[in-house]
Image (cartoon, rainbow, N blue to C red; front, side, top):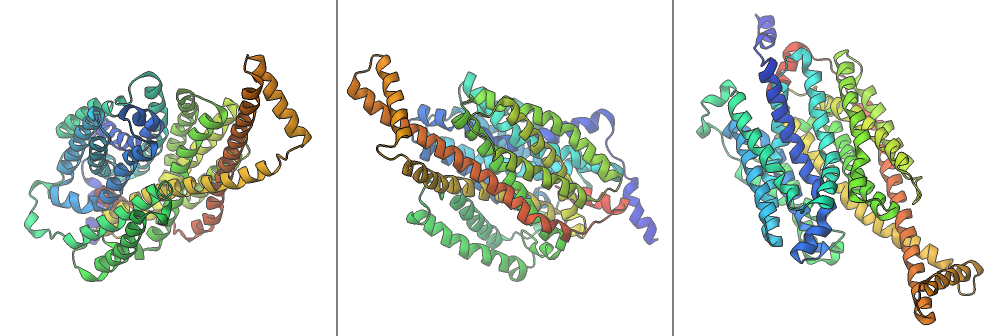
Length: 537
């Protein structure tokens, strides 16, 4: 009898043919547009600031608001799906995301844009995890690796396509189209979801009165994680603890997060996030590793465009186009990883290959300079794509592979949340480290520019003569020569600080590499694989 119970789930029907691939396209599109919107605005902040008449520091709220809403909602998706039903929650989230996207494009002042970005983040936070469950439910247990590979493509292609698409729009259209482009995709996704996605049996007649709402836990989660995300996003631009807001929110995070952990473990019988799942070694280790992956993914998405545009002098469109070869190589790599997992190749081995590839990408880019060619960037970005393909799918699988079925929703939410928090840490560390290293390098470079030094004098004379040849008088030419030399020093210092930051990112991968050996390899039977599919969201 026990054997029949275990094998029964494998006999359930799954969508096939046209219906299956409509669901796949709908789910993956939802995940991709959510992740694209994390990074797409980065290349357009200058245009947005100029159009709305605000400073770059103020317009950074467009990024911060989305990230805060995103990271608060993600860990609550398991509870929200149980309360509303997965299909209802997924469609509602798409509608919220789509309406908010239109509002962002239509906004004529900064704070209206920020408000709609926060609303967009609330809708988008659900799309990532919920679409994962829809993909898993579209494939039988024997094809679980295929579902994982497809989802992996979405979580990597989203942040990669963001700067590419954003750069093209900024160079050719108004910045509002970075948001309007979501509207037709969202409308189509909502229609297809309503038409083709079936409700699971437990969704049909939900007894919401039997589901207790952990209101205090939700409050602590919002305050703690929201404050932490704000501090990480805005700390550098607000001078860290010299700002009363940063100081106050840091205190709020330090108080709320430990209190949230205690409350979820001891204070309530119905936690909004079942943190007991972190007692599982694979989930705990996998979450730590996912922080590093999020750090590497989002740091590279932030740092590469800055290096390419500010140091090498590429346009936003050119910067985005160089990402395309790496993306094209990444797609078959995901298929390869899926096949290797299906053939029971050790997930730890695959994650190790990805780790080495991503660390190599970081160290390779740390050797570039302002003469780097397009081909140099393409090679590095291809290696990065291979690394991400080998890391994401096996690590997500192994993080939840040894959980009990009832803990799987929480496990997947925690993995997704830690990747986002890792990205926030990455952005904060990158901004701070670049600023600090630039000051150090500038000081070192300026110390070599001594009055009377032959090389310095020759450079100043050459610049002065060049300016005078353009008709500038001698006095202004000398002043301009010193100004140009200062700009050259600043650019060189900035380049060296970027190279140091790439090295730091590579070092994070090297230092965390031994954690891979703490992961337990778990081969799932058909019954457990189906349980993972049912619980994923």
